[in-house]
Each structure stands twice: as C-alpha cells, then as structure tokens.
Image (spheres, one colour):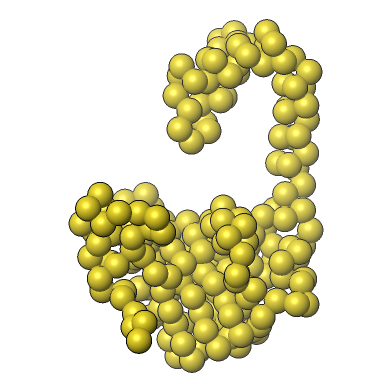
Length: 196
C-alpha cells in the first residue's frame, strides 16, 4: 500500500469520514497544506502520548486530575453523569451547570460487547461515596442504549444519593411542534412541568 493510500485509509477512522472525504482531506494536506499536515501529525503524536483519563471523573486530561475536578468553586452537591467528554464540553459551553462530572466513556450496548464493567461503574460508586452529592443528574443520550444506561446507573446508586434526576428531553427551543418527531413529543409530554 502506498503512503497516499495509507493516509487516506487513516483518515477514515474518523467518525463520518468515508473514502471520498478521506481522499479530499489527504490530497488537500499533501498538495496545499503540507506544513499544516506536519503540525497535525505532531499534535496527534503529543495528544496520544500525553492525554489520559482524569483519576476522579474520567474526563480527558493531560494531568492526573482534570481542571474541572480541581476547581474549588464547583458545587459538590451536584454530580452529572455523561457518556463522553464531548458531553462535558457541550454542557460547559451552554453554561449554568456548576457541579462535578463523571464520564462513562460509553453506554450499555450488549451487541457491541459493552457492559457495566466497561463503563467504570465501580469508579462512579466510589465518586458518589467521596463527593456525597445531594443530586446525581443522569445526562446520557436519549437513545435506547442511553435510556438503558441511565436506568441501570439509577438502580446502582439509588441507595447512595438523595435525589437522582434525568435531563429533560423534548421540543428544542425555537422548534415547532408540527415538525417534531413522535418520540421527542412523547418525552416532552411525559417530562412536562408546572408553570403556575
């Protein structure tokens, strides 16, 4: 296999990148941005070598404990359980949440061979025991696997925490009901809350 073919194949490991997109990226770097390609290769090597999981929350970090876990201003009464570090980034960018996190780095998926042992649930129990939060927010995705994971985690921690909540699912802000799918509408109606 040639170096060009290897590069094209390497790009295809990225989510959503098929053969044509990988070919465009590889050719662009080789023909138009060779210096950017060298920078990309160097950044990848450093990240793969230096980035690991936080010993407390399992978020990605270059240190033993991530900056979020070290932040003394965060609210120890709240712990948010998410599927991936990308979820933390989304929640932090949205603002408003000041508690701590725990990253499962996956979701229950027996067909893919992902069970409770792969999600670090023993570490979650340890984290709950150390923080003693008043509330654990289950922020897994609204998929079949995400719902099953949230249910499993809730059963696992229910004797160790006062309140367990699930993030709301429903019609997005600015969305129109007539264009919303049935599953989303069903969740929105079931998760309704009083306003008066």
